[in-house]
Image 1 (cartoon, rainbow, N blue to C red):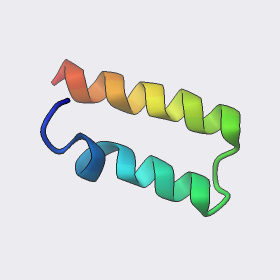
Image 2 (cartoon, rainbow, N blue to C red):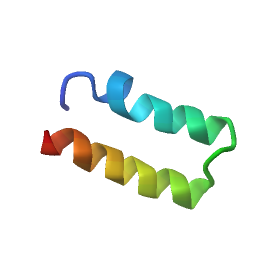
Image 3 (cartoon, helix red, strand yellow):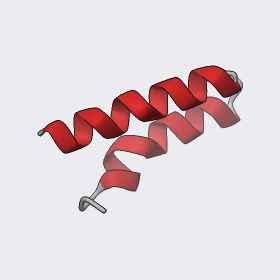
Length: 41
């Protein structure tokens, strides 16, 4: 796992889902995009 993945990348996605700003499908799609962006750098 890339250093800082949870803290710097996926943490906000989990927060948005918990706050109701993302539904389940949006959570999965956003998580995939964030992880791909993290590993692309």
